[in-house]
Image 1: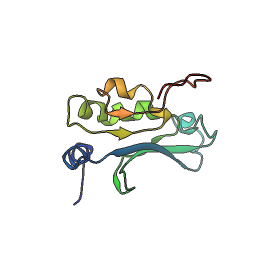
Image 2: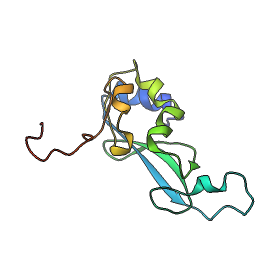
Image 3: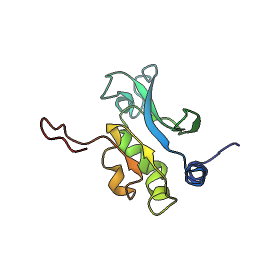
Image 4: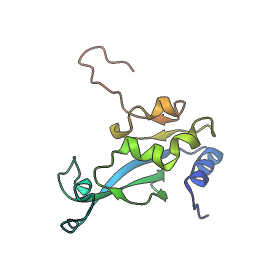
Length: 129
């Protein structure tokens, strides 16, 4: 089965009852040419290097379901998901669960709890279950 769009990926995960996993990944690139418009946008704040970012969706077995087009390196994970339409697809869409890292915190409230991220703050004592 070949899934061509993010909407098809969401429908597939919802119909199969499988858990999805999303993550942003950086790919180092050569520094854009001098004088190029938006040259500074390629510098990643995380790695302090020139990079492009993409968002990857896999199933719980690690099979690649979707890979977004590359964006400049300063593009945050939390910004990438709504830009691709993931929030719109999940809010009121099929009942499914997508696991994400801390870069997607806040996305759970925008998607009706369908995106699950680690707790925002660390508890020193009496951590909730």
